[in-house]
Length: 200
Image 1 (tube, one colour):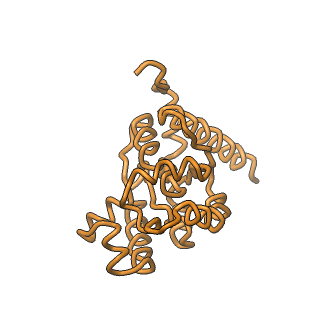
Image 2 (image 1 turned 120 degrees about the vertical axis):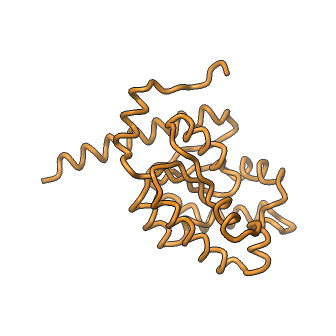
């Protein structure tokens, strides 16, 4: 595709070397583009891609909406926590997580121990436009999805802000956002490497 950002082999090698065994973990609200951008970043870095919701569905042999309906959110989150912890042990990779995953303190600790977290931050209009095209969002089975999203943003954005890297996502090609993620990861790894070298 014309205009699609690519990475030189030495850039990929350098970034992957600094990552080591850690995974790149995408967090953010539904509709932020965690899967689409995650797949593109995994391609750019030549790393495997994993979607935690798909892993959960594979383990449980049920869809995420069915799990929510049958067992409730609390049971789903407990399963999600276990699945993400197991997946992270198989790094390095690019991992896309469900919107509520990063809200779990143990999951955040596992991500911090085995990965670098990337928050794809989006405004409510972008999110609403994207999620309105899909009917598989258990938390949005509501007469006023905008109000639900706005409430989730108030609850979750302060926690998402704990992520290692924040990249704004918007109405732009996924290749462009993925390139910005790569740049942000590179800066973060360089800064954290420099601070480690400066430590006594």
